[in-house]
Image: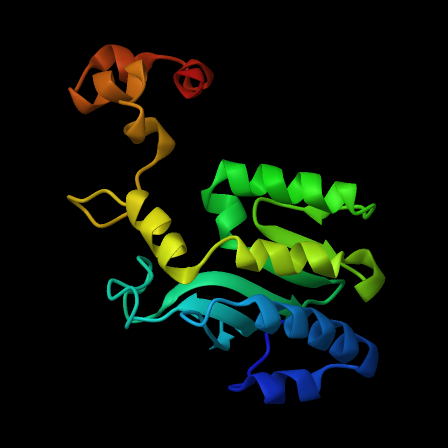
Length: 189
């Protein structure tokens, strides 16, 4: 459920007491470990932590008028969530987080960047704090920038970054062979 709150305090006030307590506890750990170059605010109907334009002037590639997102904290319909873009944009950060969460003895329910939890006891707060300490705002901005294609200002796809696949190259050259290849075969390349 997406909130229409414009401030963090307004967002927290909307939540049921149990969720408010859990979100507030995770938020307290985040704020205690957050690089001062990040800014907390409300975006996308969630509490967000972004790299502001004063640190990364280019902003978010999807909407350069917005600051560069780093993390989000939210209460959803069936769970609460903490999204860490550093785990989506960096395989080493994702591996570290998964290992640290498991080592803390907690079950991790995670997609590419979104960690879902039902109650505060599901969250190893020390791991959350370390995840925020590990990625200062300027380091996140530099990593994000390294993912951008300098010609287009858009993210590079992993296929393009590695030079492209055979079908993709042939299609770009206008080859009829690439367009007549079975769809499944083209995907594998």
